[in-house]
Length: 382
Image (cartoon, rainbow, N blue to C red; front, side, top):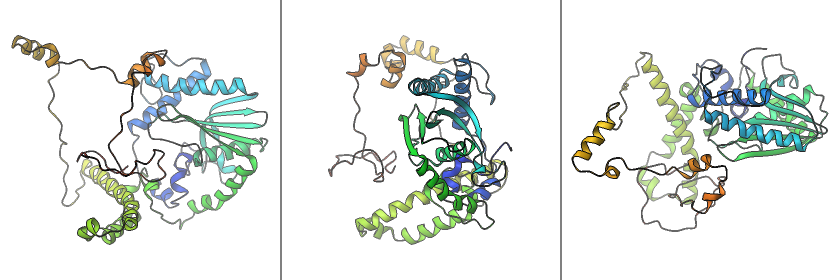
């Protein structure tokens, strides 16, 4: 089996919508981000915890070169604790971690085309558990999660569809904790059959391009995808040519339509900027553009803070004027405590400044009201 699947389950949310992204991404070299490397490290720490009954010691070198940190241990441990509770409350016969699943066998594909590594598979009497650790902050839902669906389809196929139900779980300590989605075998089979033509289309020579904001946002080929740029330019020309009309004469329905398209345009512009910077970094010219050092605030020179504090104290300034102490945030304090309830009464969540969000957002809508001031900085569209 190849080191990387041609159809990756983790990217299925993209290639199931935009089949052509498979061949586009295959021709694009993408470097691992710090977030992805830290996520890989957290998975390795979790695997060690399952195999040895405890996480590796702090500072232990991992396979991708990172050293084990307390944050990695905390993330992995929360996931392990949930899985162990599930095992104790269910008649589980087998637990498998970091298990390679040949998903492609259900779709009659050759080895190496569609496979993935499931974080946790547990085989109970009549239920299959498929759990996936997500170490990041960006919210990931369990319901309708196509990565979990593919793992569940592949594992069920290998095990002969012997389970009545499949429990699919996202373990995301930094955003939402444990999220579950349970399907019957019949429902899973129905969804698997519906995926067959989409999988075949992604592997076809004439796979179509379908640019979408969600699918293109993390696509490694977004910066060079002519379909995305063409679609975005078309929308921009059609919708934003008359700024006066945009501001003063649009109906609420027209405004809603433009906002729904703005995300795709923003995604295309962001991808184009990132690709242009990569070209300039490798010495390739981009007409009309150059690479410059970004702006940063001034800082004290290394090892100079003590001298600065001493000097200002001699000049008569109080210590709190120079280097005021700051209380840790509620989240940081809770991590120090075994009993979080002892500070709960001192914590409040202030109301954030108003921002635009799609109706699918889980936050409650604010009632119609006029705010005295809205900051002119920060992000107003989420």
